[in-house]
Length: 392
Image (cartoon, rainbow, N blue to C red; front, side):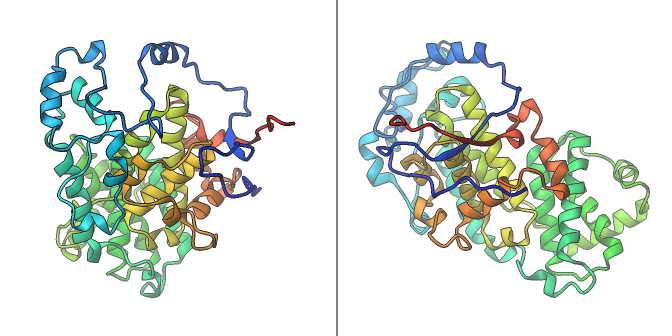
């Protein structure tokens, strides 16, 4: 049954929140009391958006004691991102083409303080900028959203069915989340170039995931594992031949950015100002859930990976009564007006929201079941809840 949240969410933080939002209406409540008590002990400094905390004001926790605050401040002198500089540091997607650095956010300083030996703060701006740069350079390599005009035997619904099955395979093997999105990308790119019969579609999907595993997993599944989980629908020679065909047609270019890589970065920045761990996880996994379900629609290929990630995160924030803040604009390069447009058929936010609000989709039960897991915040069980107006 399809439902709707209601009117467009209010963006101005001064407005009363009388709109509908997604919240728990089940008997399942996350047991986060221990985490919440730790959060309360943590000092939170609020600026205009309750984030963008100045590095000079950010106190390192006891876990960060091994890293000197003075050392971090010196490294950040050239790229510090303070609340006073927020207006100057906000970038749109067009401005990213000429910028030479990315801002440092409070969450980056915390991560550096905790894992400085693995996460050098001086590398972060260039690494993040390179992600956007690679996206622009790879624009010609992304899948063609109209590639079904090339395919005579494969239908749109077959793609959705394949990707739902790949989601189940991904869970069965316990693979990293980025593997799933790399698999989708490889499969769509190959189908954009090569016409195949419908009986070979599962082989293409399975081989795409096998290639993605080789790039992102330390111990990828072997060929016999992929054959077995496919109910022996193809042989070892079939999967090796298809692997060679995919690699040749895509020129071995498998390291281009995908939407999940952008979403991870955007989410880290967006949820840093949310105090409660339960709400942090709700936004994090609702963004993944919305992006995963929307991606089953061929329309998702019209958006570049960074915009798809930004739209999914924006939908997750607004459906849980949060806003698209200045830091979200700064890290993603997309303003709220670009993601939430008046015409719903052109608005990425409304398209993702519409998919999320289809609570009982029979064709997407595998993804819905995946996000019923407590480890993923049970976000697929969230339902519409009306806030009572203070004047009521």
